[in-house]
Image (tube, rainbow, N blue to C red):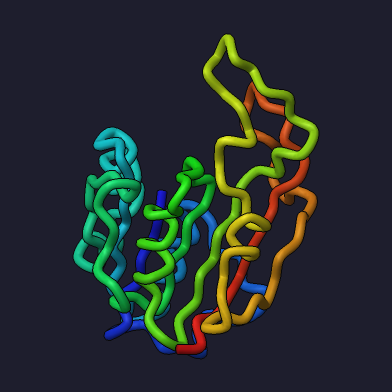
Length: 180
């Protein structure tokens, strides 16, 4: 799920180095402590409904939006924080979808992209999965131009158990700030 936090309501100082926002529970905590308006986007209506059911305390400050961000980018420069966690974004030759997400970050805003570390995973063609088909934080960092500064680009051990049936022991995290 991608979380886009409105630039009109998020104090820039509120996204600090070392912050670790993840999933709906952190979204709830982050939002209840601040005057924040959030647009939470997912392609799955079921995921949005489940998240909305958990986040009833902040219902009035979250716009649950079903959208395919690979074909419909958010408005350019509209958000102080674009946070995508475990968001499978397929590579495209022209990087159109990725550029749309990057363009959504306002000058001075933050990009936070976190995913499972896919290093060492082999392609599984019988399941239609090749880890090399998806952007990893390092791929995104290489595409950022002089308008960005990379603050964090690293692999970290997971602090929570891996989802059942998976063997992920590390996550990769990219945090970058848009300068202009």
